[in-house]
Image 1 (cartoon, rainbow, N blue to C red):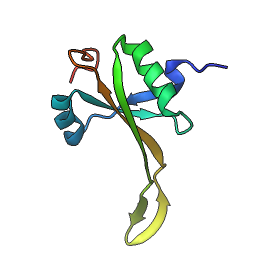
Image 2 (image 1 turned 30 degrees about the vertical axis):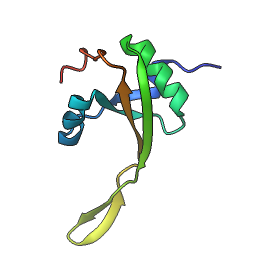
Image 3 (image 1 turned 90 degrees about the vertical axis):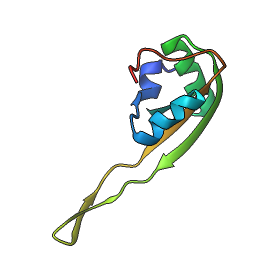
Amino acid sequence: MSKSFREIILGPVITEKGTDLLSQNKYVFKVSPRANKIEIRNAVEEAFKVRVEKVRTLRVKGKAKKFRGKVVGKTSSWKKAIVKLKEGESIEELGV
């Protein structure tokens, strides 16, 4: 059973560090925690019609939320993928 790219790629991550990675032809996405590197590669290629060279993933742990010095909850943990595209490829749809 194959997942669609909409179930795997949850959205781009637009940060200062992610914008600096654009000069190296790398893009950062928030992805499904259950997705593996092959599924992420296929989803990016299908969604943006580009060729992917390398995919690196990492899990971002949730942080404790404090109010007046007391921990009142925490943010969700999520998975991040850094996708490097082949030479000459770019994703114009992101508008970065």
